[in-house]
Every structure is written in C-alpha cells, then in structure tokens.
Image 1 (cartoon, rainbow, N blue to C red):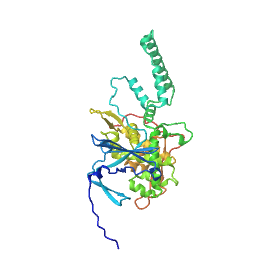
Image 2: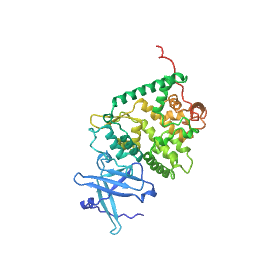
Image 3: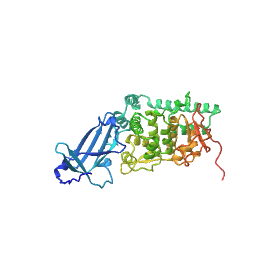
Image 4: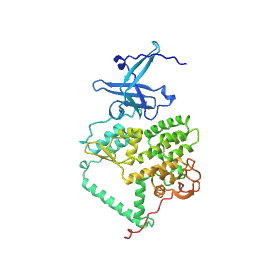
Length: 429
C-alpha cells in the first residue's frame, strides 16, 4: 500500500527571480541527436520588461520572445514549475509568467530592417545598395560591370546623331524580324502569345532536354535558403517516422491526400531530397488555400500557418503581387494568373517526385478543383493526359478510390507536347 505523506507548500518571492525558462517548439523539438548541441541564450530589456530567448545549433536557430509576433498569443493561463534540489531533497516552486514558443529560423539569416527606404536615391543607387547587402559575388560583379558600362550622353560629342543611328538600327531590326515572321508559315500571333504566357507561368524549362528529369530544373526556383529549411524539416519528419507509421503521422499532421500518398510510396530508408519535395508540396497546398489579399507581415503569416519564415517569403515572392499600402506595410494580392502559376508549379514538383506520372484526380481533390481544370495545367507543362483505371486505392477501405474508377493521368515525356493555340473569332451570341 502507498504511504500517505503530508506536503507543505510555502511561496517565496525570491524563487520567482530564479525561475527557469520554459519553452515549447512549434514545429516539434529538435531530433535527439541534435539536442546536445543546442545552446540557449536569453537577452532582456529590464526597462520594457522584454525578453528574447535564442536557441541555436550548428545548422538551425530558434527564437522566442514575450513581445511582438514571437510572443505567444491567447495564453491567459498561469504556470508554476517545480525544481527539485537533490542536495536538500526539496522542491522549489517558481511562478512562470511566460512559455516561450520557439520559432524556427535559418542560422545567420536574421532580418535587418532599415527605416531609411532610400526614396531620394535613384534606381541604380537603390539596386547597388541591395546587391551590396544581399547579393552574391556574381551579382556584385554584374552590378559593377553594369555601372562601368553606363554611357553619359553629355560627355559624347555628337550624342544626338548616335541616338538617331541607334533608332534606325532598332527600326531596321524590327522590320527584318517582321519579314522573317512573314516567311515562317508556322508563326502566328496566337502561338507567340501562347509562348509568352507559357514563359510567364511555367518554371524554367529546357524544351530540348533528352530526358524528362532534365526538362524542369526545380533548383532554379528553390534556392539554397529554401532547401536548407526544407532539409531541416525533412530530417525531423524522417526522425518521427522511425517510431511512427506514415499513415498515423499524416493523420496527426492533417496532410492532404497527395503528400500523404507520396510519403506512403517512399521506400525505407527515406531519401532526404525526396522528403524535402513532399514537405514543399504540403506547404504549397496549405498556401494555396490561404485567403487573399493578405494584409499582414510575412512573419505574422508564418506564425499563423506554422510554416518556416523562409518558405513564406519564398511563396509570397513567387506567387503573389506586392503593393505597398498607405500605412507603409505591404499588401499581398493573388490574381488568377498567380493562382494558376501556383498550380502549375505544384504539378511540376509532384511529377518530379512521382516518376513523371501523376493522378490528376487526386490533385484536383486536394485543390478542390475539377480534374478537367487540372489537366489544363498539366498540358501547359507539356504533359500527355490520358484516361486510365486507378491501379489501387489510396488509403484502402470503402472511402478510397475504387480500382475500376476512371482517372486522368498526366505523363511527362520527351519531346514535350504543348497545346496548339486556338484559332477563330469571338463566340456567337
């Protein structure tokens, strides 16, 4: 039988000053192999009673605070933490005013905001400042060459005649181009407009690629910063899948059908690069269902979605139009063209991950669009869309896809098969 013991509690205010820091990780704690290298630092402003907690390791850093967007919101509870002293065999209770929600960030990628917007500077000066701060060695070299090649017409004798000569050259080149187009029987304004639209919406494409894996190079729009963040998340997912089944993990995280099936189809041991694409695809579907216009900062949106800030900024830059509001903060809009661009990029990533074949019915279910609409995007990527029977169910059971159901399957093969431009006048009324 258990022995009944009387416990007496006595609160002392001196305990609160030495209370430990309590933190929780929004995207889950770091893997056990990395926790030993995790170092915590606390920065405090006593005058404003503001505290910033930073935990960093070799690759990743976490930040939490009791102010700003990093502060935990809607938390009206009071907490107490017991600290057991092994020497005195006593438990010391401390009041904890804040539980810090640690937000993941790429190390050495802190945001530096300058109030000086440079409104009085020229476009070239603003570009130079951006390149000096954020540019790579290649972009700095290009900027230097660009400035050295600037021609000041005031310092050139006969500048007016030079300008006139250049205009004549441009007019002659345009005339020659029009003559070549007239001799080319395959050229039409419709095909030129379709090619321009395709270049605007499609990822970087190599039409003459010998194999499908070389047609769309995902690294052209997924830069090193995005891949670093995805790698961290992929390694955490793989760590969880060592002790949890893929189906249970997908159900707990609320993943859509497409990334869930992709995880279930990956062989073990899991490939980190393929898991990165699964995580990226899940983020794309979540971003697709966001509401626009978005009148909040990227950091606040990242906190709301539980998505890394690097990925949020990447999506906002790639799939939205930015307009600066009257209050000085940006407003993000997503037009139909940007929505279509997001769908096309999603299909390109899914095709690469799934061996360049894809069930469009499954994609339409996740995006809440009909398969007919999704097949339009697949054709724009150069895919051949064919009707086929579903080989097997996605999840199994009565609610899954029946084996006799007809689906639309997109196959990316070379040479690419782009849709032909439509001809004809407006529809009759």
